[in-house]
Amino acid sequence: MLDSLHIPNPTQPVPATGMTSSSPLVSIVSVNFNQPELTRIMLDSLDRMSYPNWELLLVDNGSTKGDIRPLKTDFPHIKLFINPDNLGFAGGNNLAFPHCKGKYVLMLNNDTEVDPAFLDPLVQYMEEHPEVGVVSPKLFFFDEPEVLQFAGTTRMHPITLRGSKIGNGQKDEGQFDQIRETGFANGACMLIRKELLDTLGYMYEPFFLYYEEHDLCSRIERAGYKIMFYPFSRIWHKVSASTGALSPLKTHFLHRNRFVYLRRNRSGVEKLLAAMYYWFVVTPKELLKYRSAKDHRNAIWRSIRWNLTHLRLPSDPVIPTLEPIEA
Image 1 (cartoon, rainbow, N blue to C red):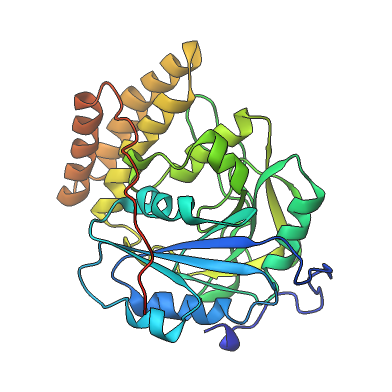
Image 2 (image 1 turned 180 degrees about the horizontal axis):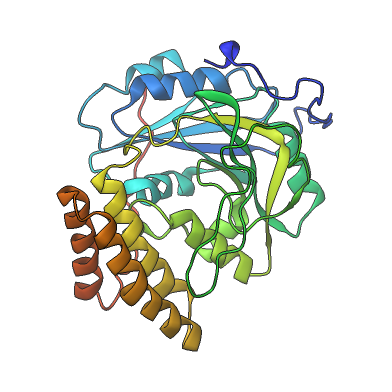
């Protein structure tokens, strides 16, 4: 838990923010799937926050093990939604968005723990910069609490659709302590203007897992807003706690959704060249990479079949109407 972590750069305090009880309401949205104890730790972490004005909307996304309901008793301030079906990362978050009352929505993975002062500077930065649509903090690996997972990203190449996380795997020594634009925010923790969700639409549910935050950030950027990395806010991430670091499930959705993202966010000659690169470079390379791993190879073939049988991408389904449960 956070109390046991050694916070990086203790000589570089988080800047004072001046946030008060009149600060804008932030709606924190998190999704649980079969991990009530992991979610409990996240909730404990949030309850130590210094930010004074927030609500927590927790969606149980069709869990098949572990009872989430005791969390409502132990954390009576949360709004808990029980969904009978697993709608994926995008669908789970989308269930909560219509109920968010905040000026800002914070998407936060349930496999994270936060610095108590992490939210104050993010909100103040957004308040002072109306041109910014989304901001993400500095992310660290939970098991190596001074090692960076995310300090922004490079721009995604228009043809290869490849970018890279800045700072990934490096010890934090302040070398990335510059506020700057990033290719994408990090879906584990991203603060978004609620008005943009209302006007541009929610996350594209057919992604199910992976690339949904890339797609959302691309839409927000096309609407004229900036995507920013803010280094003076910190959280710790238990990476791949739900899907496994090298699971076939992850292989399937990463490969499938790379092409779905391409189809939704590229056009003209750029789209044609990117598609050719995907089919004639990426796909053969991935199949060769997993030639000795049948489960992963089959996962790639499933992703290929899905795209070939969905030449017309599915529309977003109607978001089910759920009400929070009582304790």
